[in-house]
Amino acid sequence: MTFLNRYKEIDRLNKALTGSDPKLIVIYGRRRCGKSTLIRQVLKPGDVYFLAQQTDPVLQRARLADAISAIIPGFEKVSYPDWESLFINLRNASRNMFTLCLDEFPWLVKSDPALPGVLQQICDEAGQRKFHIILCGSSQQMMQGLVLDSTAPLYGRAHEMMKITPLEAGWIQDALQCSPEQAVTEYAVWGGVPRYWELRKEEDSTETAIKNIILDRHGVLHEEPMRLFLDDMRESVQAFSLLSLIGTGSCRLSEIAARLGKPASQLSRPLDNLIRLGYIRREIPYGEKEKNSKKSLYKIADPFMRFYFAFVVPDISRLEMNLTEQVFDQIKGRLAGFVSEEWENLCRKSIPLQPVSGISFNLARRYWGHGINGQPVEVDMVAESSDKQTLLIGECKWSDQINVRETMNELNKKIALLPFAQNKTLIPALFLKKKSDLPGITLFTPEDIITRLKI
Image (tube, rainbow, N blue to C red; front, side, top):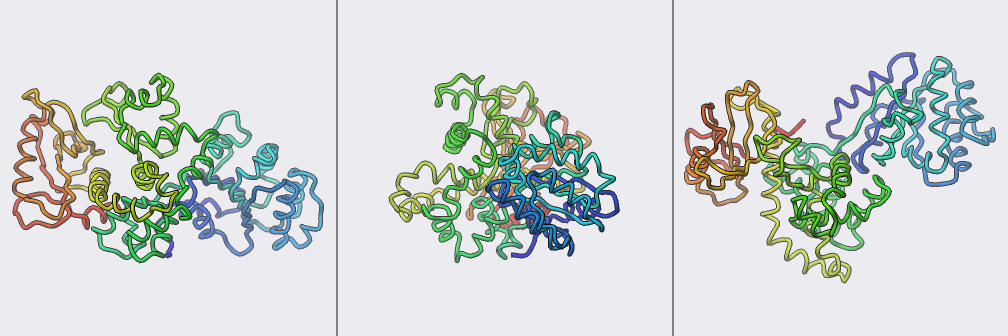
């Protein structure tokens, strides 16, 4: 598949690797997001790329020495009893500036915790070396601990630190060569991980891809969440339990705690950790302050993980019995509703990215609460303009059959009840699956949203 986006990352890496001063660059993020592919875009002839394996340090050093021998002949003929001897010899033998990339760096550290201290010494003697160092890894927690922790040997020594996150939905249309409408559906299932898109592209349809890649017990992604958790945390059972509950509708802290039989206070740290790693998000209504809101809802942030915990985990026993078709038949009836929720997320995410009617807006949120009549009221989207004078208030619908005039009338009725909408300029907006010829409305379709999300 064609390499997509990452233009800013490539530009920063090229700038960092230009010049005679040796740099330390750290690249991390969840597996399959294209970190190694990104690195290969900036490496040049004469650079060294080394992919670590989970083997003994003696074998790792021998393999690395062999890779280095491609640019320093004879480097592999020396026996290196430790990492310090290897890097000292590399420093002394280097004549021209090159880049050394250590991919899956956490595997090297796991087998020999002394390695970061050796690299600290090499970095502190930067004037004596003629090579840049790129450290790359999929274990987000370990990579952060090796570089961001103030007690870590490499703390404060990186010239660039890049967290590579999944791609935005705007790029999946290019990857799969599909319509904007289909792109929304595909993104709701696969999320923004490029490798998942490659796997999907090998199948004839969304249905066969879901069956063969996710549902089938031999599918490549059938156990993907557990692999991700093992990368990112010491203990994965609690994370799996939390996402299982959230994925099946337990979104309030009190509800999650009750289902687990634990005090809510014990869940704050693991939930915060999952938020930091990008697996879940905390949602609060528009107008509430994040620090002290008591209306928090926890949602799975990553679309693929949301699909997995909504549809795979509840039926894992049937899937183990190879009842894939039976499980998919149930998914098929719920898929439109599932995509609808992701459509809302994409619409909200798109609003701050480009002006609407010439006005720039801040982050959009859902609102649920009471109207000025004391009755419950809910709208899919509220966004305040940067100058705080205008509100964009919208409803998101994912259906082929929508009475646009009736939907707009319902939205205007809700707007009239919103307590924060008084004395503001208002822009009512509809986010619909299909275009409408109804004049005088602000309307967004999948084509509009996918285009806005191509960042």
